Amino acid sequence: MISRDSTTVSPWQLKDIQEKKINSANHEKHQLFDVIIIGGGITGLTTGLLLQQQGKKCLIIERGNIGFGTTGGTSAHLNTFFDATYPEIESDFGKENSKLVAKAGKEAFSLIKKLTKDLNIGCDLEEKNAYLFAQDEKQSEELKEILDASKRAGVEVEQTDKINLPIPFQSAILFKQQGQFHPIKYIQKLAEAFEENGGVIVEHTFVNEVENKGGFVYAVSNHQIFKALHLVYATHAVPGVNSFSFKCAPYRSYVIGVTLNDEKYPKELVYDMMEPYHYFRTHVIEGQKYLLVGGEDHKTGQGDAENAFNTLESYVKQYFDVKDVAFRWSSQYYVPADGLPYIGQMPGEENIYVATGFNGNGMIFGTLSAIMISDEVLGKKNEFKDIFSASRIKPIAGFTELVQENANVAWHFIADRFNTEAISTLTEMESETGTVADYNGEKLALYKHKNGKVTILNPVCTHAGCIVNFNSVEKSWDCPCHGGRFDLEGNVLCGPPRKNLERKK
Ligand SMILES: Cc1cc2nc3c(=O)[nH]c(=O)nc-3n(C[C@H](O)[C@H](O)[C@H](O)COP(=O)(O)OP(=O)(O)OC[C@H]3O[C@@H](n4cnc5c(N)ncnc54)[C@H](O)[C@@H]3O)c2cc1C
Image 1: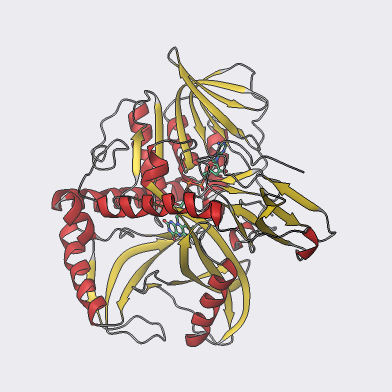
Image 2: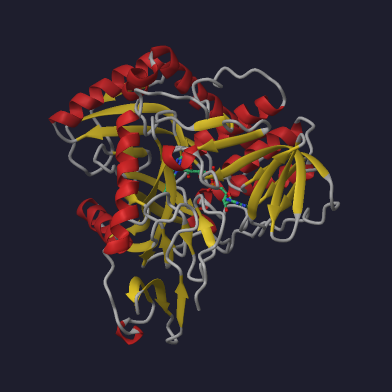
């Protein structure tokens, strides 16, 4: 089974899918690469492959294994409509830009189809219809606006009177030519093709510093320094304290995979309009059909994971005759301040590129990033450069969200320092639980293992100094401010921190 940055297991990690054996780690020491790509998810692998195919010598460095990040915990829909709806994009960026976003989505989806065909990837890729349904007056009005603006943007969509799901609804629309696939089977083949084209992959290596000097970019890990002309942060969250820490808000999202007592598995993709929304799709994995249902998202470090899974399960059981809950997994995504991802040159850093803020649409936006960044590295023009620019300043679009997210961050910074429960003795803690406590006057993150051993960490997040919270389901320490997550030993799992939590004992 491949590992992920979370303890829960997604179906994509299943053990009979062979862990990719990376052969290329023994590259020539002190070699100069054209491009270093940090991150072995869909964004990093697609970017690496496109550049390598076009003659650039590339190195991909990954903290865990290929698929360790959100690509291993996604639900893998392929959509040309997004979490930022077309009416929102039109009103914040204008009608012409809305058309460009739709075109960008189609191009990215086409590339996924092309690579799947060219590389003969058995990744269960299927094109499907997708239904979006409204359940009250307000949602119906919004849905009508989505229908009209999506059509104006050039997306194939129409009104429909069915959703092929046993859930009551008032109105619905149907997006054509959407899709789904198996994300790990897909990226493992990209990795193979990347290596066959001469690319180098180094796994289990955490880049904790990047230096940009004298025309070269250096990626520094504990054991090695790698050198290149260009560097791409395909890390989902951009490491360190930078503008993206404030422009992208981290969320946890939950998915369950259930088997049914009857054959009422939806054949198509279906989404409701609740806040946060639910989605439904079916995938056959190792010969077994599963209904995958997702939702119950909340800001990282600010919700109860167990509760989210239970609510999701009860919701599904209202409408489906569930036989067994086979999978429960969660993963992390980043909501951009103005609705669209940030792709391209990192502000103020020549030869360094970022791809972040994908919301729940990173299969498409990660692929789009690969197209855009490889064009930029190769000096080719790309018509989507301005709309997704990582340096864009949109004072109107996203202003409210940005203020709200940062108010929330500031609130945590203050409140968490004064709100923790004081416990005077470790014996009060149950085993396999964690808590942040004032212990003999010092704030500590305590985890009691099954055997009674206690791991003690400094709960101050190494990214921007907020206090981490314990995630009882993923057994991780999650930061409520910018989404940094750490394992029980304090090692960085995901998000923008560059350093582990300080170990006290
Ligand atoms: C539950 C859930 C469901 C989703 N469903 C969908 C969907 O249906 N359709 C869709 O389009 N999108 C979906 N998304 C979003 C999508 O999965 C992500 O946007 C996408 O996987 C991001 O890919 P990535 O390659 O950019 O990042 P990741 O897959 O997170 O990869 C980044 C990699 O970088 C590595 N890394 C980070 N920092 C360092 C470092 N310093 N050194 C070395 N390595 C590092 C990480 O270990 C990680 O493997 C979903 C997200 C969630 C959470």
